[in-house]
Length: 113
Image (cartoon, rainbow, N blue to C red; front, side):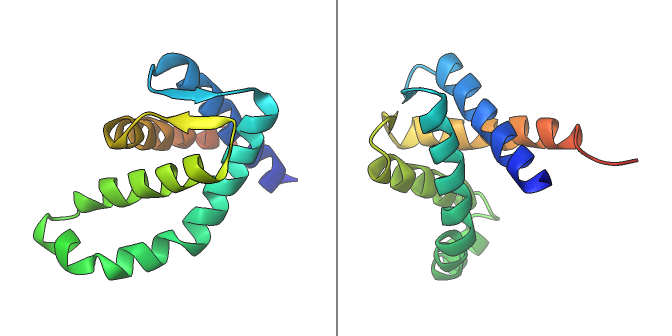
């Protein structure tokens, strides 16, 4: 149940950011849920492979290249989902940063004390 609630919170974050950012658009709430689901699957399966492959450049840039890896995962989700679009790499970087911050805030509301 908590997993479904986290997925719905992530979908809400996607909708909010799509309304705030000009370079990101999502068709509706159903598409936002699909985006949240696809992003979580890509973060589980593809992102670790990308992190390992880009480890030397990540070490050289002191971890800042991970922003580009996150943006690449978002652009991959953009190519997989027809109702979700990101205009470029810089919009994807900004979307990834703001999505992480917003998800952290929303998921902190779920923590049991």
